[in-house]
Length: 570
Image (cartoon, rainbow, N blue to C red; front, side, top):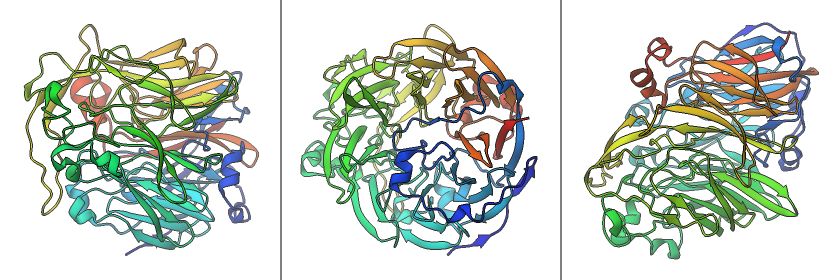
């Protein structure tokens, strides 16, 4: 069942742009690789995952003149807005809660079309990780979006009418669906399921972009004979996994790079005997890993398990794969939710590991040459004496950092928070519907020697050397954008968007959006003018803790509300 309509509210403060002819231009793999400066064609801007704009009309010298150009209200923003907009040829596409999709005139905010899928509302009411949606993909004249009831839908870019609607997951039984954005590459749409906390096997799907026919499926839990041996007691049958955020495509090796989610239950009670005891004995491949899949066949080419037998919910599904060329080496930088940043070659051979957080005690360290976890903390059932750091929301989360090729710096948010923990033995529930399998009770807590805070770091992406840092009184939950105008934009949790000098970290401008940020920010050009677009709207799993923990503005902050705010120079 589907519904197509023209709706959505725009508050317009701009000029008119004719977009009908621009809509006809094609988005393909070559165009995404070229990453033209006017557009934002895929989740991180291009397959390089820089989350960077080469536009410089808005710059450090004139950013003080930035003001609101227009606002769009998507409506029904349950749990806020978490998506990253896309732009092609002056048209902005973005998603809201319940997988609503909008196409807007990028200069004026005028609604060109909108699409509201008919969803299984009873199923959605049983889910914990919905109904938010984190974005769409563009390709071959279509907009691709996943749904919480297990479908991947293609809409015509010109009209918003349904081209195809493919059911990929039996969400009635498995409960999970899709909340992350798809990835388009080489005539294929790839999307990973939720699932780290549910007793499934975490599939990643590839679908033909033209027809909607499924091409292949890879199981992140025991997806090969080698991996199945790392799940004792047949625990692979309910192992969790998934790849809930989009990865990237490396055309030189014809490879999809993807991050995978944690195993289930999240918190195992095996203690140091995790290889042979507990709920899921063994290393639990390919959970909490980065994997390389052949885009044509879905076969595994290589992998690195960042956290063998993840007992902390610090999975690897963070979607950033920053593709760098440095000193004759082709490198990949990938943040793990733990706050450790992994550096690989293009075959996922480990080159370095560095840490962005101060407060971290789930391990003493990770060996930068071998990836070995040194001094890991594994828990028995019962209360854990010392708080676990970082908090379950991560030292970093799904929100994206930004690499600026002009400064050579990687701008990334780090979160300094911990939690009390009591590990509880559980039994997987798979019938009649799969249920969450967490295995612990926990509560947010400050670090042992200080207060909870967040920070924006400017670092060398390969070595981790820090150039500057800006602190925030509460961890920001949104993505970061850097631009060729020597700017870094950070939308914070209190609802203020900040612009900093990319070289020094000096704040140059800020503006309140009226509600907290936990989504994306991009820049694009329409009609020869540069714009900054940011989604605002609080109310997700991490932000649910903000009012009781921090009080202040969070007690009165709007819930289940959201807006797309677009800025330009006066």
